[in-house]
Length: 236
Image (cartoon, rainbow, N blue to C red; front, side, top):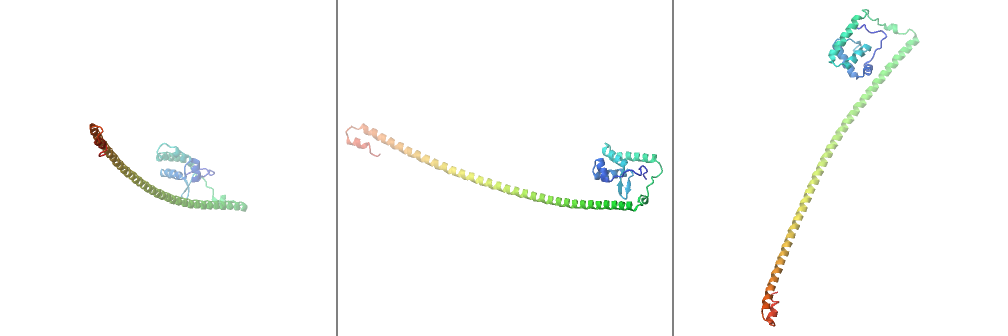
């Protein structure tokens, strides 16, 4: 049993220790379990640990240790045993509860009123924590639902966008194919027109050559002959 604690020494809750040491409340419980596993003794109210200044110093040592936590915890347990062995063997006289109860009815009334207020504050805090937890669960559920809706919307939007892209790509492909077909038809028509023009030009050249040949033959005949004049326009 611990005998290194003064009767007027302040006791701390887990939450107060967490604020004092600068760690989370779950970490306080974790460090306490590590210390107890290696033989450290805490004051307890049932299963609840009650911390004093020396316990806070032990938690700080665990927090700042560069060694494995169990190894540091064993060192702290050895230090605690030395303190307990070196201190007086006389157990701390725990003041009797009835001695702390004021005999004055007014003081007793104030004491009971104080306890009632503390109990009411604790109940109010528990109610608030319960409400906060309910709101937190509701918020988490709403966030999960929103996440599902957003994910579904993104998926649907992605599918619609992909379908639109495919449709536009198909339309563009058909448009280019139609333009290519029209261009091909225009090119074929132009080629036929060019061939017709060439044929007409060749026919014109051939007709002109034939005319020139007849003219040349007619020139060779005696001038003043009627046949000579008529032959110029024959077969033209």
